[in-house]
Amino acid sequence: MDDLKRQALVGLARFQVALAILLFLPAWSLTWWQGWLYWYLLGAACLILTLYFLRHDPALIARRIKAGPGAEREPRQKLIQGVAGLLICTGFVICGLDHAFGWSSASPATVLIADAFVLLGFYVMFLAFRENSFAASTIQVDSGQKVIDTGLYGLVRHPMYLGALVMFVATPIALGSWWGLVPVALLAATLAWRLLDEENFLVRNLPGYADYQRKVRTRLVPGVW
Image (cartoon, rainbow, N blue to C red):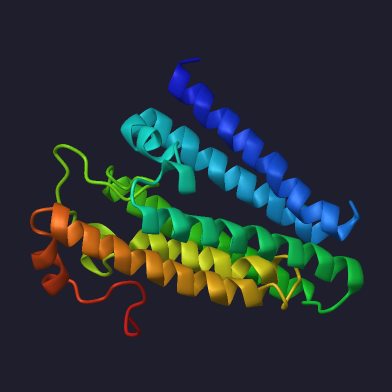
């Protein structure tokens, strides 16, 4: 197994362990079927995307393997990533506590529909990654990078963030929790903050990005923003 593949799969395994702790420790139960279904679906989706791009675009995996506040180069992005990570963890913990104390609930049909939207969000991100090999986890401009305006990038400027937003909004409902939407609302605002800061960086550092902004007016959600 080459080093990149080993790093990617070990990182994915660690993520799954961390996710299980964030979900099931606050829930204090292993009989939470919504939690298990979400955990399996998320793990399967991450594994499929990782294996696909390890085979078809390992450069993308290399660009995305280092993530989080410590990997960012810009101080503001370090702060944004730190806030986003805290909100994501808080959201999972609240969903677990919601299950433990019965603060709210969602019907099985609603949970399954939300799981479908989680997978839809992953599919949108997959399409964005497939179209743009330069979609790194950190804000940067690599040598030879160019503006991508094909595929979903011809409709919205940040389809990867759109997919992530769909997934994040659906996640608490997939876990049977309505209270989990509170940190998600704050996370959406943080995502918009990151997006605007990223665009300012790209205008300064990526030739042609300003023209792309004029061509594709929608940043994130068609007809909204």
